Length: 186
Image: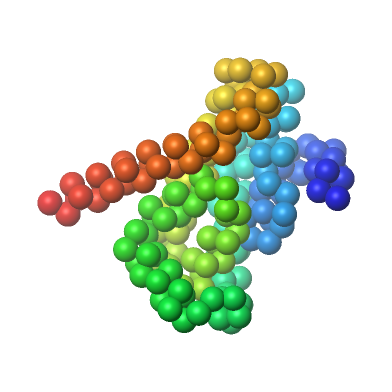
């Protein structure tokens, strides 16, 4: 089923990439990497442009997911999580702000979970957008750069090491974020 959806959207080219990137950030199941990687391998000179399209569409879809979270997120959360867990999530978002969203852009957990949760716990929208731009942008541009550098080998490298690499890069971003916050407080 997912392979058929990927093929369907791949036939749309850039528009398919944009639609998948937008919808994946709020409710859809096809990850943008499934189109970004092969499109970048076929046309590596456009890989950075594809990463830009993917980032912008993903952030816009994330904003849509955020508003979905404001509308239906709290009742949905209450069906699946205890009030204690919901309060803990709210405290984490308050404490880590954009850092939580930046890290979310790199985790294997679907990004839509974080976008809807952000709206449900009423995270500051500009902070959400900035964190999304940094986290999602870094992830998709990293994929594009890997494709540009490794060419046809990129698909097997990303499949084999992608999850670990994105988590490592995510952790690096989080450490950089915490160092920035510590220096800003002083």
